[in-house]
Length: 121
Image (tube, rainbow, N blue to C red):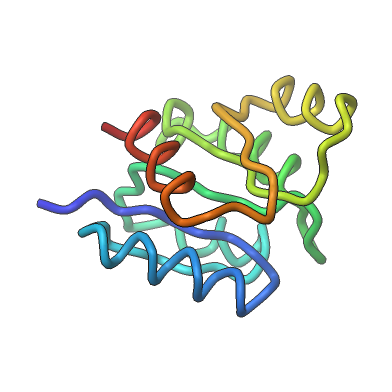
């Protein structure tokens, strides 16, 4: 049974690139356009990994991480933040919220797959 990854990003291009890379590697993908959309789509799905942008409208990736950690059904699911943000303060905020990892955009598909395989074996 393939693992399911939810990719959350307000950029259609980034969602498409991540989804294509991961689906070609055998993962099942659920896409969300922001944190609120992600929370709405979590119900009824078993998610093995969340890949979330940080800067999004409506609900950003750090607050999404906090809410996923507060939910008993997603409390222990790995969450990797994928963003252009590289400031130490943002990384610390993500870690404090419960993020499992951090990928800086732009990245290549092999880097993405390596991180996914590490946090979602």
